[in-house]
Amino acid sequence: MGQPIAERCRLCQEPTLEERAQRIAKAVRKQSIEVKENWEQLKTRASNWQKQVEKALEKLQQLQKALDDLEAHVITAEGVHTDQQPVGDLLIDSLHGHIDKTTTSSNKELNPQNYVTNKA
Image (cartoon, rainbow, N blue to C red; front, side, top):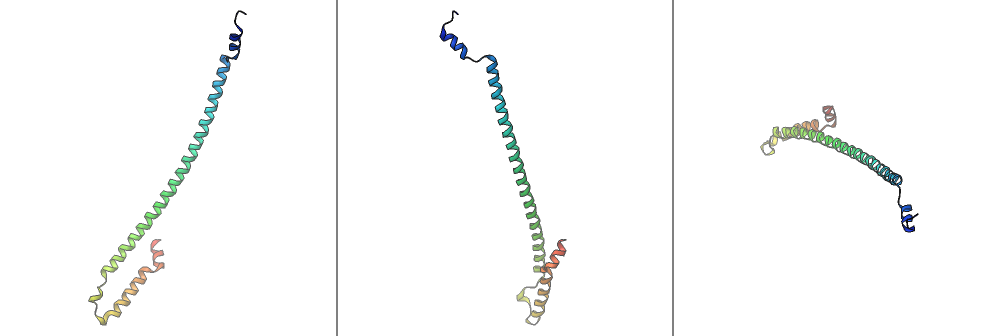
């Protein structure tokens, strides 16, 4: 009882080692829960991002196929165009025959039925 009253009150207010350990354990558990929640959010965001990347890739692949198809049609059209005789070189008498020939070949090339069957 030789301790002054102020010193005894200070000792009563200081946490014991066990209390400090409990506070530290509680703080660690709280941080652990926050880390787990943040990890789950990160996984969800990464999964959503992956789905968006896959959708973009699929659309780009579709675009590439459409461009390849278009290129094939342009090459075919250029071949038809190259085979045609310039209008200035046609004789007036044979003009109707050339028009009919061009119309018939163009209709075959542009026929949607041909396009569908050629694609399959």
